[in-house]
Image 1 (spheres, rainbow, N blue to C red):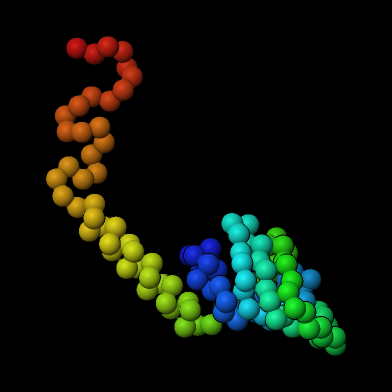
Image 2: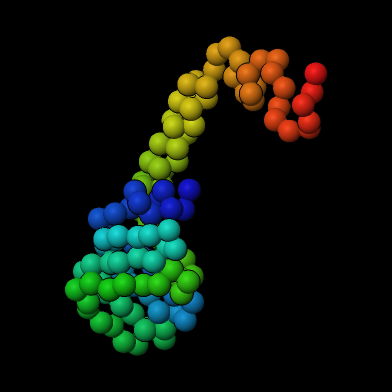
Length: 115
């Protein structure tokens, strides 16, 4: 769910808190499999909350992220989409011989020549 949630969150607002306490509020531009993210129109807040910066764009390394906050509506939409995809996958796999490896009655590979 997390990576599919991030890909669905592109161009949506999000809050990112880092392990050092700094926060970033902005719109997600891009993300990768390491949860490295790029935000645009960013408001950065210092860990103590005393200082603020407005940034046009920033890159955040995934290993420094403590948590991400995305809109609840987005979370619900992604959950529904995954449920639909899972149901569609189950329906597509149904039918004769589903789940059997190597075909019905055939021997597996290995274990000598057999007979």
